[in-house]
Length: 305
Image 1 (cartoon, rainbow, N blue to C red):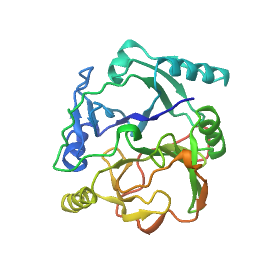
Image 2 (tube, rainbow, N blue to C red):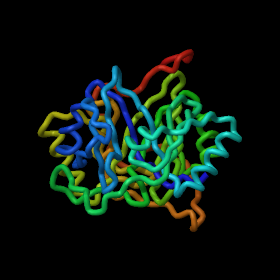
Image 3 (cartoon, one colour):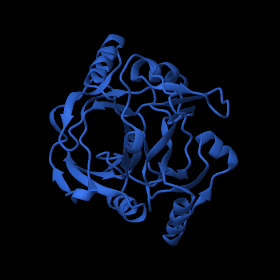
Image 4 (cartoon, rainbow, N blue to C red):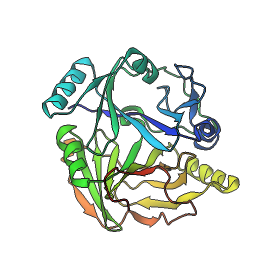
């Protein structure tokens, strides 16, 4: 399966409208028009592809959908055939859904943890259109996609098998974190577009990472959080695996935003070697003052923890 990048993310939240100011003023994202003109939806982007992140009103904070880009119509058809051979039910996206996602065609499916995913091709690009919501240098996207996400899954082995064997994501490395194994996957030069951590009885979106072009962009955002009293989940630090210099702030929708700079990339042509580590950070990334994660939910029938 030829997944190229993390293309878009959709979430639901009772605080959806807060993103209209939080996204541009703090993160530097640009507002995008909602193609369906929904009054309770905020669309944002970090490059010339409108609507990379969509936040809609909902009763609780939850991840609604992860969108993965494939190269073209033929690769989408091959991906559908592969999913169906694996016994995964695939749903064709309607014309309205494609319009909302700004893509030519999409299909949807559910992974073993219960997350909704979409495969698509033909995402809208408006060259030269991106204007950051505040003064900053911009974001690292292009072939590396939107950024990366970290998901909490109830059964790590089951999800690992699905993402690696069925979807074809490639393992970058692993970290043993507080007794939990975290597995990182790449689909392009970005060190990871997805990471998963197993917590029995729970699932949800832990964080979305946005990578900026300048270390000063990270510093300015950090100062703005202090000035505005926005809680941090983790302080400034540098990760062991991708060497990202970042901090984690709490979004209005309960999940974290990792705001970072300077991550190393992977090169499969050089025969990338998988390793495992026993610490997430070389230094820093100490717990902040944010409350417990607010975008996780118990899995029905499983023991919450």
